[in-house]
Structure formats: structure tokens, C-alpha cells
Image (cartoon, rainbow, N blue to C red; front, side, top):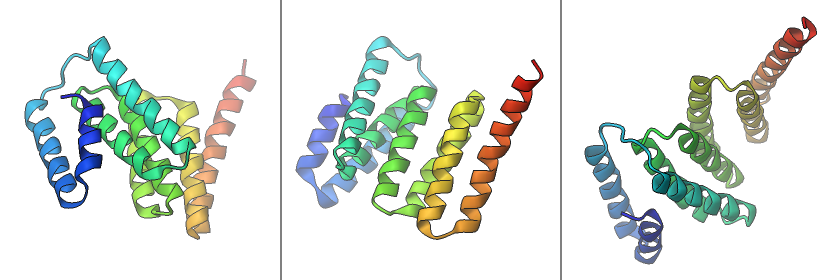
Length: 167
């Protein structure tokens, strides 16, 4: 099933039918892709195009379209265990919800992205997501939580600097 086509159909249906269709898609992916499949070039290109579209929508301040595209790319990436797609989709969802001031949803996606990034052991991206989470808490009016995340960023940065100083 082509995700872009699915997205266009969802936009036309709207409301109740959109929710019903989304529930069907989620159920379909859960049952048809319970075992991770090998990702093909076509799969990765389709996911990358969805992510590119979501990024473009985010830059145009079209947050609802960003969320729709990023969610479809997340579903497809997750069904294929495509970790790069999962991580990038989660970050797009978090950024879009943050821009809409839906802080609770944004936090949920940032925390999921953080867990995915920790699996990949990517220190630079971990610093970035912790910084974004700190910004989220600051904007949300929870400065003590923001400070905790900013301190995580500093601790990682200090650790990286300490390691390079040893060389």
C-alpha cells in the first residue's frame, strides 16, 4: 500500500472516517508486519520521501501535514525496523507537536526518540534530543525539568571534552 496515496485518501475523508482508516492501517501493520522484514531500496526511498515531505511541511509551518506524513513514515519504518526512519519520524512528530504547543504529545515523542537514539549509541544526536527536551520544558513553564535536561547536555559535552583532552 503506497503511504502517499494513503495520506491523500486520509486528507479527503476527514473526521471520523480518517480515524477509522488510521485504526485500520495500524491494525494492518501490526498483523502483517509482526516480524521485521528486510528493508528494500524502494521501502527506504518511500520512507525517505515521506520524511522529506514532513520536513518540508514543518518548514512551511504546516504542522498538521507534518504530523500526518511523519506518522505514516513512523508506521512504515517501525514495521520494517528501519531505525533511522523511526528516529527521524519521532523527532518530526515531537517538533510539530511542540510548535503546536501540544507539549505532552511532544514530550512523548522526544522520549521515544531518545530511547531509539540510545540504542544506536549516537552521542551527538542524544545531546540534540536532550537539548530539545530541555527547550520544551522551558517553553512549557517547567524550568526545573528544563535545567535537568540542559545539565544532561552539559554532562555529555563535558564527558566528550574530557575524553578528547586525554588524547
